Length: 247
Image (cartoon, rainbow, N blue to C red):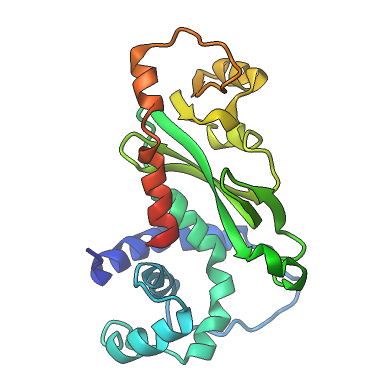
């Protein structure tokens, strides 16, 4: 159940630690420019943006005008117009990414790796698409073609995110794996798309065992019963993907 107060406290605690460090890392322009103080704190802006994604609304404008402006003024006393709020959104990208990372779970020694497509438009309208024209790429899932990006993710056996990576749609499934599993250890299970002898060997040297399903034309090999059972639990990571995409 979504509770606004709990979310704000979590984000606020994060911002108190993150903002001072972040501001020290920002590059100066060399010019004395006046920085206008915002009416809303960074933690308030982030709370509203995160709330939108669990609200069930399909577009942010409707959510802001119908919910935030009408019912949340008691929580955000210095609420601004929709136009002003939208101007602030780009400045929250890095803090939101850092907050997400702070919410990652702890490696338990057993994990699952997979990816899902993020479509930016229907494949019949690719030639008309302009927003991600430079970044989005065509690729294919087990079902059909898509135009967009790939979201790669790793979860532990408790369905907690351990790491994520966003790549162009045509990037090989195995390419982000070394970076995704960096600093982690134990056994990680994936589908046939992660089969690669060199990748498995490189990870083994780092204390990581990558267990994958076999293709039909591959010979069967002996496998621990526990590993075999865990390979048959794709729902573990699929449920996380379902929540991320359709919450």
